[in-house]
Length: 519
Figure 1 (cartoon, rainbow, N blue to C red):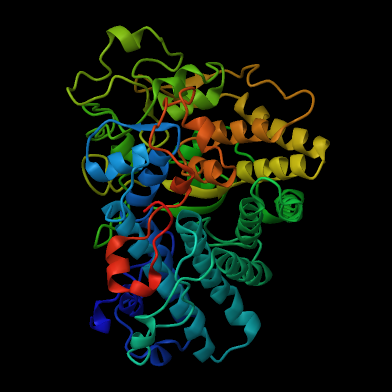
Figure 2 (cartoon, one colour; figure 1 turned 45 degrees about the vertical axis):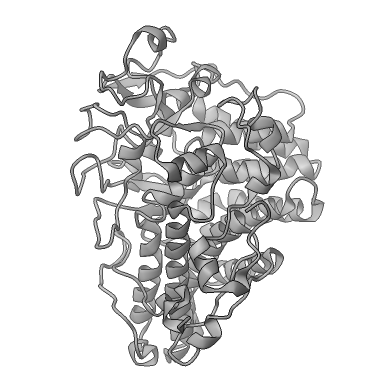
């Protein structure tokens, strides 16, 4: 098989255009990178190209984000496309096109980051001038690999620029053990933390706080269920962000709804690192489709409504405290924010034949901002990949495991306190003010890891976090049982904690065999 058929030859392309809150500059094929990289602006262009891949429909715009939702215990499927059914029922095959598409898009983002990192070596300026820019590329590379290693385990780790001279070598590359991938991720994030500034002009540009927050999450993930050393590291990194929140210009937004309101999110200081669509549409599907994927079919409230694809189970709604403002923000019951459980037996949510008669995800459909396309596509959302509330919960969970109960309770209750504040959201398409509530009440007594995981489930619902929590805490046998929110998933096995490596990639490079266990 000829070398040009391998995935890795695609790495010589930086990307399409830059992220929407960054300078927009088309980037083409770089046949001579050393000629291109002359200034820090050239490094920034390559970084922008790397992060652009993350807002593509094949990454966070639909494929990866929806796969993570479906594989969790909170989102069911209201359609019957095989590729989605496999993710929802945990029967995913190696030829699943959702996997192959976000696999490729992720590596393209990595390729562009590698171009920036190695291209920076040709820029003849002082380290303190170019490293703060190059550090963004180190962050981007870590960001992409962190997704890959959690999904697939052992993976090909590429940190060089692919050129015509080394394509033959790339065509025989083998898998790197997950432990080594994690070491490389940590090294990249530590470099980023050293050189990135405390704040940036946009939360779509990595900052020192973003690097430190991701280090905390990486250590928490590596800790699994019983690694005290990594729990301590996770706590230390998270607390560093918390103690320096003033320096980093971070805090909880007083209104939870603001985090999912494209019209006001730019003024919020809660996001730490975000993917910003900003009414942005680029070539090759560079736009957001989460709003229609999760929206109500036949609902005319936001430029065509949705497609009724990814829909929560009824139990997600009924088991969520009705006085918790986050439920009103996170879920749409088709009627009012107070809800009426009877409506699910005698009410059709929109009247459309394909609209499933359940509550819907509301985080991305109520305030999507301007659309670059009809049918609720290409929104203006900023998707928080990391926000301050999650840092508090990382610190709380790690504190439980290192026997720091006061910190665990303090940080958990800080998140709950914001949830009690109420705010302004939509009810039946009309903007309404929701008064503060006594719920969720402060946690009294000893906080357990399960308490924090449950708080993460509610606080971060439908944000692509729950599946990763299930995996790192090995919760599958519980959450996919008959008592789980979606009922029993009979095909679940511990092998499902890892996805299969894409079949076409294995066919191109037999050195990546065997596939993950169970596939």
